[in-house]
Amino acid sequence: MPEDVGHEIAEALGTLLKRGTRAQLYGRLTEGLGEAVDETTYPVLSGLDRTGPRSAADLAGEIGLDRSGVTRRATRLEEAGLLRREPDPHDRRATLLALTEDGRRVVDTTRRRLASHIEESLASWPPEEARSFARQLHRFVTTGPFSQHSR
Image (cartoon, rainbow, N blue to C red; front, side):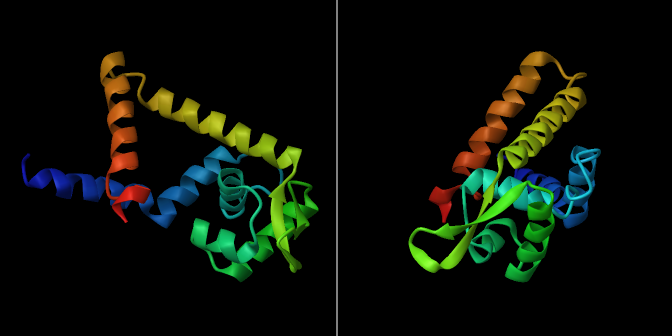
């Protein structure tokens, strides 16, 4: 394998992982979904959809925010009816954040929008090349440096 492949992939990943890149994408995906849903609150919804009910502290680690940032965003989302706070069954003093049905619908909408956006951007690719890219990207994510097994 050519030595520069790792650098090329690292550079592309650097662009994808930049906070500004994510914020711009989340802004497009959440457009028109209500005042509470934007590029700053979407990671809370998406994180809860991936993990299920979590404390603000646990979710903070999952989505790369601090606990107070998660709490502020959760309050906005709770007021909009997209998440609720519920008692932690394992610790009566603790509270978990959980998606409501409306919150799940918002996440479903944004994920459909993302899939559509990706498909549009790959429309000019030959179909087999797009399928191969999807398979290889999935393989890289599940077995590469980001996988649970590589830690």
